[in-house]
Image 1 (cartoon, rainbow, N blue to C red):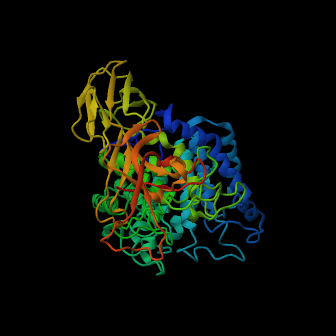
Image 2: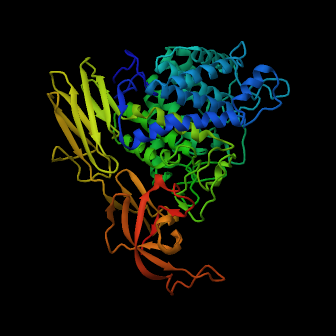
Image 3: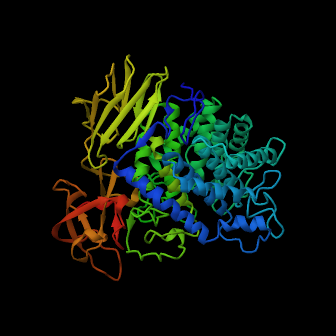
Length: 632
């Protein structure tokens, strides 16, 4: 295992040990391409957009009202609205770490001063509980989200520490964490929060500060989970993972975001406490979830009513919930498993969720977002009003803000820190896991300096060229992840056998290594047990899932009136792909079922059917859309 405690790392995840060491924002910079564009919009538009709306709807003013002693009168937002302020501050912190933006730095200072005025002498901090006219502290652990809010406060503080700012926000977070340890320690409240988040935050704060008690408290929360301390509800205790102890569970279940945040915290705890049994248990749960409860896009959660995982293979595309926050949670979990195990295949999971969930949520201009991400839209949505708060689950078109706006701030913090997911280092090598134009300068385990420049047009094209800009005089290894879909990949013209292309030699400055991945359209079919899409096919291109959007169909055709003709190949196209489509002549009968002996539907003239990246859908106005297409 490689130790990571001997130097400061400007990264969101910093395990005490692991097979691979993450690189920080001081070591990796994305310099162009798909993700650089997303980071630029995020840093100059989306973060300020979140600040504007949190001010407009009063979530920031909740802290002013608390400081003025006027609460509960005038408090706005749900019981967890404090957390979205903290997530926005975290996004600002990572963006400052990435760019040094002085305006955001000043705004962090303003918000920190405001937050600090609300904190009680014993460290308690919340605008929803604890005052006359409000519920008592910790009187509603199932739904109150007090510990959840602390978790996001702590993660914002970790972002400040990791970007070189041991400031008042950090002091506030440490006082809050100390309070949690006192209130929920071995002699305190023997309960857990209905929404996991404090666990992963406490471990990361322990790593950032060296304070062992935070790690111990995270362990208490993880071990308490699953023993029925929370009330039974209509969705069952599995909704908040309080039905089965973490070590005994076999699959992720219940509310998807809660389950994923808990898994991330349990992985962190297992790694830092050398608890291999816990790590193995959670890893197996995640593997089973990927095999049985995950959409093609990497999205997780098929239930709208409880934002939850369904049963095995219950993956209806038109009813997919696939909350954007669950996509962020999936990235968090897979990245931690990659660092712990060194298994680069977890990079495939990160990549799929990034391109096909996280990147789907924000509009191209960064001013509106999807909360849910269905794979099939039957009815064109109506544009959301630009100056109104939207209901989160309607999934019409992207909306500027929601009554529950956890997703915009979650996307903002993830995109700001994205460079930290590109590469890792081991004792004698560098590993590339995500492909984007980038500069990398780091040190191997022996202290040797290594520098790399990555040039690529990925994901549009599959050529990735890595140029050495610094190197020691001795041999070291450059390892490049080869996605599972990339059959026929080559490195420097030689076929790659396996999920990693490894080049080990004595490098010289100016040496180049070229990986070629077959980024071209390919057909994908579902497992027969996914009843909802049996008989359908999907088209993928590299790491990107494609879809058909009615905007690209002729003569007002809708996506429920087409089939994909498999007699001709799908052709590559700069915008995605083009396939042979068949018009289906549907009839509106009085009874929507037919005798099986008759024809299912008549097909008309073929047409050229364009498929575009799923992450781009609904950027051109109201439309219908589908990922899974019936095969003709």
